[in-house]
Amino acid sequence: MAFFGGSFDPPHLGHLAVARAARKALELDSVLFAPVGAQPLKPLGSTAAFADRLAMTRLAIAPEAGFAVSLVDGPKPSGEPNYTLETLLRLRGEMPGGGTLYCLMGADSFAGLKGWHRAAEIPFAAPLIVASRPGQRLDDLEAALPAGLTLETAPAQMEVKSEVEIRGYLVRNRAGESAPFYLLPGLEIEISASEIREQARRKSRGSEPGRQMLPSFVSEYIRAHGLYC
Image (cartoon, rainbow, N blue to C red; front, side, top):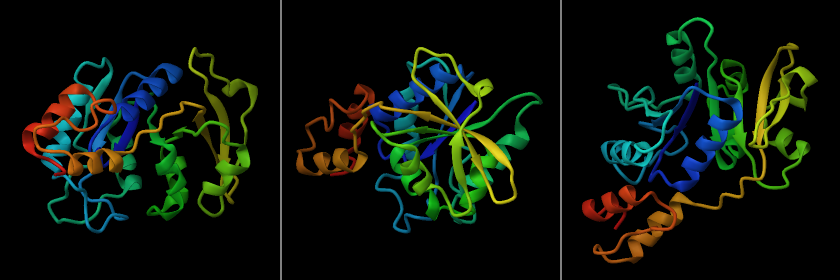
């Protein structure tokens, strides 16, 4: 099972492509799309309300086998920020014995990983699956890791045979602990949620923003509810 957190403001075709690739490459039973309640790195919050982001995520993944929406990272009654590490530890504690929890993220999220709460612990709470940019090198990946972590090519036994290209690495910390790290290289997904929101602001309420970047039901929801205008 893979945890796929984020604002999903809105959920777009890039999110779905990353989740499909990860599910196929690692033969995942499920991918949990978990809209976040309050991101610590976004003090002004998301543009759309949590209820709208949740509804759009449900619509986006509805036709997809093996995708599910999770409220595990939803708003806290206290209003405190959601921290990925805490969410992963909670999910892992609720999993049945023998199950493996992964943490799936796109290239943009991985690039900002250093700034996350207790970031160096995250790859050890759940192995990372990162959708990389085309041509990204090992030293580029290491540069994005939190302080104290290094990356090395994985041993042969970690090799994954799949129709989807996937590369295996090991991430190590200063204590000598290691955890698997998987890279989905070259998906070439250039879709920006901020660009979609900007398109919606520029267009009239009668239009369907980002039709080529969004699942049709999500585009219709944005138009019907006047989001991002």
